[in-house]
Length: 175
Image (cartoon, rainbow, N blue to C red):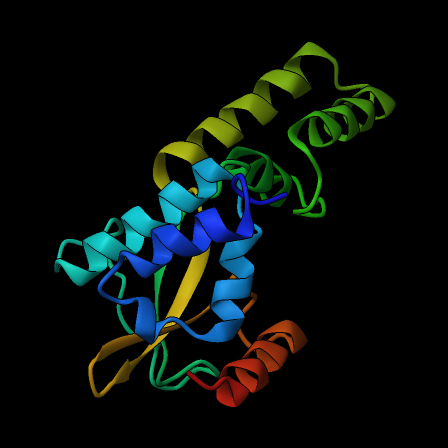
């Protein structure tokens, strides 16, 4: 979809002091973001660059994990609510909020859990949204001129095949 046009997005990015520290891969990802998501992305990086990250712990991944040596900062795409609703209910994170809600309600009805099931689901989501809602990662590494921003990626399960694949991708990226 993107925000207006490729040239518009690139002009926004070129005005940032960290533009030369964005990987080509990341730039291609950012070009596809909606205008709202682009704004969330740039605010997250601007804050990290200013030493005021938008999340409490934006730093390095654990030194023993597959992503050791890389860091991340969170940003919330405009579809973060749909993603978190899907995660809370073990559904694919690619579902729209309407589709996620439809699948959740249908599942509850099939299990005979009417109003109480919907109420419990809403309470679990409210808890997640207030305490552990997740956005996507902007993954970076330390470079000679500051953070080198490599890729946007959704959270991965520690040790999963997806995390292994992400590590291979990150290791292969050039600035």
